[in-house]
Image 1 (cartoon, rainbow, N blue to C red):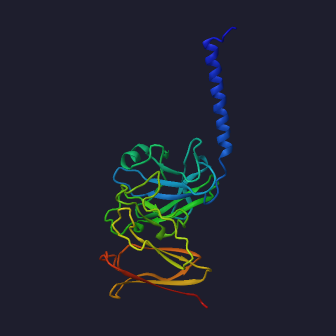
Image 2 (image 1 turned 45 degrees about the vertical axis):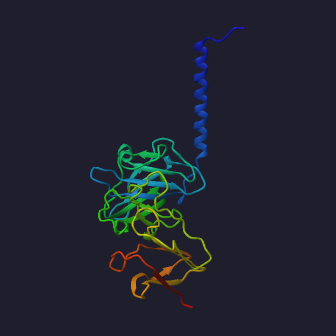
Length: 300
């Protein structure tokens, strides 16, 4: 029986590999599903890097379908409030499965040198990033038709109040299922994480409490030192209907009022507020027992 020559064999293998590659490519394109608002969320932002550093934005796929990042555009808003600074996130097919993170930056090498990033993290390097000012600004995920997928209007004052210099400190979303435009859903990345967690779960991630009680406080004991472990208390309100107004005052064990945390806040069905252990003048309170007194009422 005559055997094939080595040249013919290698030619056959090259054709086979090319065929398989084309099949996989077609499968990947068909497997990715159309991008819809809320599928991908803005999960972490570094808008004030150290000198000669680079901004980054982390995204998270909170949906139940695989997304091709070719469909995603990162942008900001100009002084008139219009979408501006659009940058394509990916130049080729990059699939993000449900529960996966990805990072957008203009310099992947710098990012990996300054933050701990998983080796297999998806990092999308763009030629440049939209402008994200150090004091406040806008971060948008949009599709190619300018449909807003997620938007964050951030402010520097959302950082942990005890951080004197926020340069190089990212702002983390506490719960990706809670609204982006809620200052209580953001805080500084912990010191123990290196002040940034691009490519993996945020150092302060905490899912909203799902309970039957109207008011849930968690954890019962917290230590506001930004070490990444129970650095703040979260107060979740779970209402049966809209239209309630809430006030929340914090007292020390002697009955002295130390913080008026919520003043006539209009509540929705689910609401979250954060106490950072500071008093009314943003001074740290001493360790001890504190009483949270909440009053909720509606027009009835």
